Length: 104
Image 1 (cartoon, helix red, strand yellow):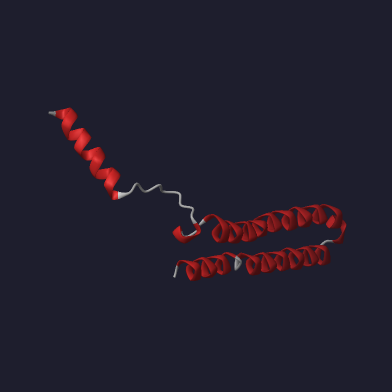
Image 2: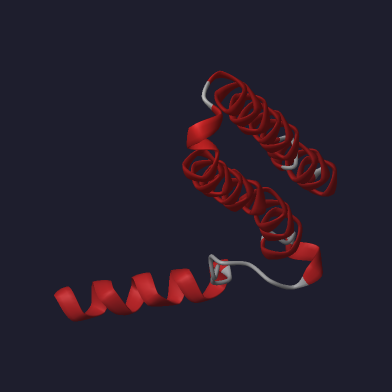
């Protein structure tokens, strides 16, 4: 069950790649339109277009990072790793009886 949820989460995290592709397309389209309207500002708009590409790609780099994070960090208890260390019930009852003995 947990393995399936991890795979679904990792797949959903990569949906951001489609958004990045749409963003890059919008940046390129806007750059072409701005140069067509005012060719004298081509150099300045090219710099803005490169900045737009870079920022869009930076956001797109978070998608595989999150997918790897979901698939590798969140492991099931069967794999032997957990962020929350759980003590066995016998040791918990022993700690409780020791605490009661100290308080009385």
